[in-house]
Amino acid sequence: MTRFNTADNFAGKAASDYDEGVAFNFAPEILQPTIQRLAELANGGDCLEFAIGTGRVALPLHAHGLRVDGIEFSPDMIAELRKKPGGNALDVRQGDMTTTELGRSYSLVFLVFNTIMNLATQEAQVQCFRNAAKHLNKGGKFVVEVMVPALRLYPPGAIAVPSDVSSGHLGFDTYETASQKLTSHHVTIAADGSSHSNSIPFRYVWPSELDLMAEIAGLKLHWRHGDWNNTAFDDNSKAHVSVWEKI
Image 1: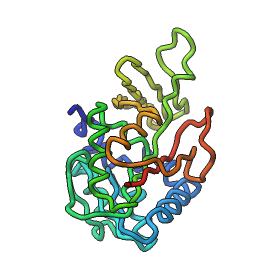
Image 2: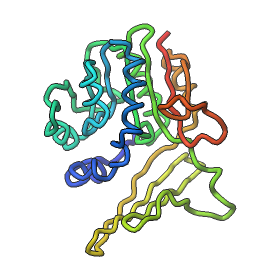
Image 3: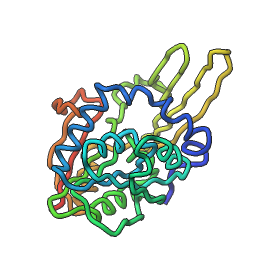
Image 4: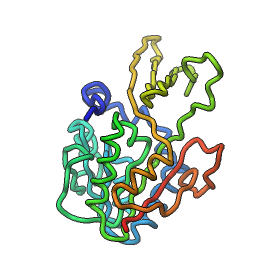
């Protein structure tokens, strides 16, 4: 299976700078409803985060009083998590979220912030759902937070759509519809005028495609909203939070 390149995107300086690069996701108006919804879905049970990263969600959820275990492909991201208060209290396994098994079951498995798209083939995404189902109790929930592919934003002849244009950052996304490949291109500009560029490959995925993956894994759609605040999901939604239940 083809997967992301951790050596480029989730290791070394990329790992140590990761939190700074996604600082907007630590804002209370984003993080607090995320933790609240996940805690509600766990209903006091144990939780497992796929691609736990530096612990942005896992650590406050653990502080909420829940057991939170994790699987993470990048050892450098795990090292960053361990540096944080409470980071050593989490049981985190270094491994691939499509195949790594922890040998126990959970009330909730979750995968946030578009990370399902880091799996670069449909086969790998399906296997991720199957691995989630293996870790769930009957009636347990699998949660995925992911963007809706922004193909509607493309005018005829366009080759890229800007995701951010600011004084310190330029971001553009390119889509290849035949392969469902999305590449996110970034140029970061430092205060001294120096710049750094990188491009991150993804495989974009539609909500209906995720529902089929869930069905293959023995999961049934429980609900889908446009965000963590339970906003209705509709034709104008830019992202969705979807929850499937093990049947």
